Length: 330
Ligand code: HPA
Ligand SMILES: [Zn+2]
Image (cartoon, rainbow, N blue to C red):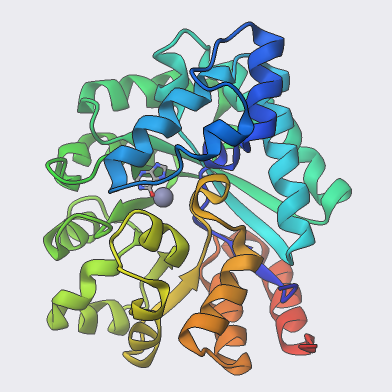
């Protein structure tokens, strides 16, 4: 669906398609435990977040050079542009690369080269969000922030991802304070598999401006009221929720109830190479499965630009919002 939109919840490592994984494996002499792309695709049946993360971290070992990261991001941006994305705020997981000997500068400069060319090449403006792995230590997160300091001109925010349950946001209070002191904005995954209390903690202890997923807020009406009153954006990922079994089938996704409750919902793809669709496909899927009408889809697109970190460029935000209003569905 070509409705103009911003993508605000997208892990660049989760855009690694099987074909590119095999190409990079051959180029870098990395052996994958799968015969071919077809056999690899049979591994894409997940029970929960952890079973996905195991494959996600295993496959990204093919990413080694600056060119690999550039190629990965450029391929995503081309696909995103073809599905109406006008602005993308892109997550990356530096610790998943530095832990296996890839320098953080290789990762950031590689991604940065694709991102800086994106507006001219694909018509997509971009930002980069550096995520800490919450199942690693707070010390490791802090060391990662320090290692990223020479590259801060390329980074607009910090985030928190990976295995949620047992790793509450408060563990990262210090590194979030340090990030804010460096001028970085703050988001965090919360309430994907973890309880509503983790969403409250992300807001109260980390001071996040957006909540990634936030799905489980619906179990806590007082929290919903607060998120509505404060217009805290939620970056929902419906196809991810189905594939990782947070929701049984797409038809049961609470997105319509969340919109009816007045929550500032956005729809995103999370890890599109693994979860069966890019963000335009996701808009189409929620239209079909949940019966969201055109005006509701337009609201989701409008929300995505409202929630985007475009405060330094309100003219651009206004231009994108005007494109949303002018869009004619076919
Ligand atoms: O959906 C996700 N949740 C948490 N961590 C992740 N890292 C990549 N995708 C995800
Ligand atoms: Zn995510």
